[in-house]
Length: 505
Image 1 (cartoon, rainbow, N blue to C red):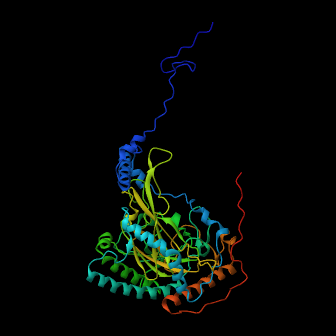
Image 2 (spheres, rainbow, N blue to C red):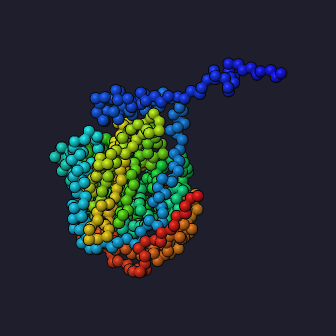
Image 3 (cartoon, rainbow, N blue to C red):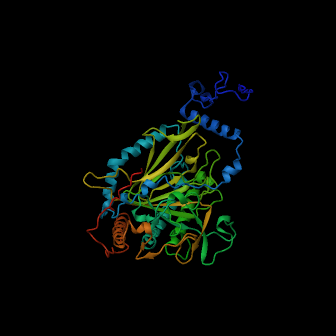
């Protein structure tokens, strides 16, 4: 007869009735403030504040290696915006913008967007949630300071008029490829996102140089300040092999006035004590430009990337804590602020930032020669909420027309801490990525070949060049050049052929 196997206290028979059941940890909702008794009687903004303090306290209590988590370089997966990279959604030939469109644009604005803007301004006055970003001179009480700001604003207007003319003649539409991480390279003029152009000041010899680009001088290259080369590389979508940064120096045709524009922007910003304190010893050293036409837009984003609990990430191109000066040229455009509140997470007992209910976004109108300050405090999460911002011209549709035909240029003065080496010959950024072959102003990469041809490329240039002329004439009453119609084919299709997506098995 076989002996019965004995089990000690640690090992019990599977059939034993005394076998201990597996303990499932109970969700402790009382620690997350979901219990109504915890926050009863408090305002919504006070609740968000308490939630943020609780999150930070729980994070500090855990024995995480904070140095390791903060110093680890941020690597984006780059797949969040892949839906915007489908060639079938790209418009090839923009609509013609007729002369005298300034009056039409203002009429459309008053009819379709003005009520939304007015509602936002009325809500801003009554809401406890502060929006720090504002138009220049809005909260200035000193009459003499206002007089100085108006005088400096006129000087800025004249400098930008000259700069815009030179920019449109030389460096307009240079960025031919968009290629954010893990997305195919496509022509930038066909992308749904706004066009990016950069002018940067040189880094002085007595200023420190970044370790990741090498401290030794590269022959044939100049060291300049840079925006979008840190955490923004994966989202802005600039192809490292074809990216250009133009130098804002006295020897450059457009860059010389870019430097003057940055000086005027900084002088005007420093006349406001609040922004003078935020800038401190920093200088505006990068003039970034976004060009909008048709349905081009900028998705929701923040200029400063934040970690979950510990403030700004270390690889931000823009210096955390500094404001951004935004100047608008051309047709009206919208700047929308989207509030994100700290709410209970659906899958665990913590909190996450989520969209607020519809109708709580703030829409700011930006018109020709508007000066606007984007304040970093709106991106600070410590209050339990923060704002992302986006920019577009949506809902500006005339019932008698098919689409909005506006053309807008935004100029942004920034204080950046990242640096890149720029070629003295063609302004291309030093990169270890392979160079792309160029022929007839068309990039002949494998991906670019499938969505464009040289004839289509010239058509886009012709229409956009014409739209630039009409915008410049409507707002400055000057036509700086004649329209070059070479390469224009009126029978070309307006859209790319839509590719059939393969269904996943």
